Each structure stands twice: as structure tokens, then as C-alpha cells.
Length: 300
Image (cartoon, rainbow, N blue to C red; front, top):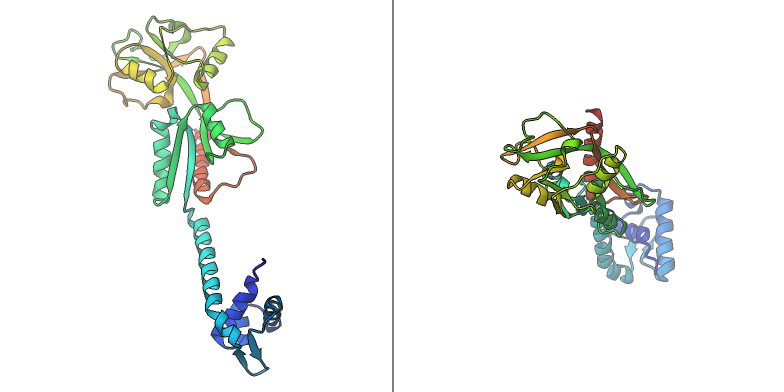
């Protein structure tokens, strides 16, 4: 069934204002157009809702019975439209963000803090996962926006580089290399080196870059997650090569971050969404914050 909302709205305004000219003015249409709306509605219903002459208008009994229901319909529709306009203007709502876990230490909290200042009533569901799982969450529509490590391009995903994240050498202050301003990869064959699993995007990227320079690494410890590696470093178990975003300077008492050179290896952090997909207003607002971050990073 097709609902003639224009006709119902015209009927309510005429009944409330008591005159065609006043109703036409409120709807910003001509009286002729208003008359056509009423005629179309009555034709569809097969009933007369009002009797009218050039000087007088009066609701029929059917019209009087229909008026309260018509008012409810018009008011509810107007309310729904106003709510949608409010969502569009204020970006109200909730959305799901998929993000690699290394960004959850201090980069992501800063972004979410900026977002919550502008949209305090919005709710974000966070999926912290591997780079592969982030892309899968977007492709399966579990998430609208993703933040991940740049990987193999996918035809259904749109990626924008946020910033470059260099790999650093992390160790305790008591470590023999802790006093250096920089270390190179030839120093990395330490007996206490902690490496992350070769299934992580960071490890795959690192091994590829090092292979181009004829460098291979062997570690005494292998872990699945970056967080585990930095925790072991903090506990004095060993040293590790990790993204700079795993923790900020002075974030871990007793742990130092030293630049790695020869070569300098940087992974690219990207923001991702599905191609051709219109983000919800809440997700679009966060996407704009990410874009601002990307622009600022590119100017550094």
C-alpha cells in the first residue's frame, strides 16, 4: 500500500487552519496544488473528507473521524524527520571501529578523546584485532571504520595513510646497548632478543624490508603479541624490536627506546573503510578526525 503523506498533511493543515489559502501558505504551495493533493487523497480513499465551496470548508463525518489519526501520523513523521536531521547535523549515534592492538596504547585513546569531546553522547564499539582481522571486520560489515597496518590492497577497501610508524629497539636501561643514540640491525642478533610471531603484519613487513637488505634475525623468544613483548622487556627478560606506537617515551619506567638505522624501517598506519559505502554520521565524524590526523602527520 502506498501512503499519500502529502495528501494527509494537506488534509490536516486545512482542518487545523480552517482555510485552503492558509494551509497553502504554510505548505508553501499554490491553492491549486493544495486542491489537487486533497482530490488525489480522496480519490485514492474513495471517500470525501471535506465539503467545500469558494467560501466555506467543512469536514465530513468520515473526515472528522479520520482527523485525529491523520494528526498522529503527520506529527510522528515530522518528529522522525527532525530526529534524522538532528543526527545528520550533530553526528549523533553509535558505530564500530576495528583497530590493530598496537594503536590502542596511546594513539587511539587520544583520537577517541578528541571525538568524545565533540560527541559526548556517542558510543564506540572497539574491535582490537590483528591487521588481517581488521580488514575482515570491515568486509563482513562488523565495523564501519578501521585503523591498521598497510598491507596488500583489497578491491573493496579504501585506504588512506595516517602516518609512518618506525620500528625501534626497546631495552632496559641496564642493557649493554641502552646508552647508544641509535643501533643498527647488525647489533640485533642478541641472545636475549624477543621477536613477535611471523604471523603478525609487523613481523611480515619487517622481514620483507630486511630481506631486501640481506638481513635476517633470530630471537631467543617468540611471542604472539606486541604487548607481551614490551611486558617482557619491562620485566628485564630481554630486548625487542617493536613499533614506536607500542608505548610512548617514559611510559615504561626503566625502558628506553632507541632508533634503529641501516636501514630505517617504517610501517605505514592506514585508515580503512569500504569503497562506495556511506558511513553513518557518527562514523563519518570519527573519519574526519582521522583525516585531520593524516593531514597533520603529512606536514611534519
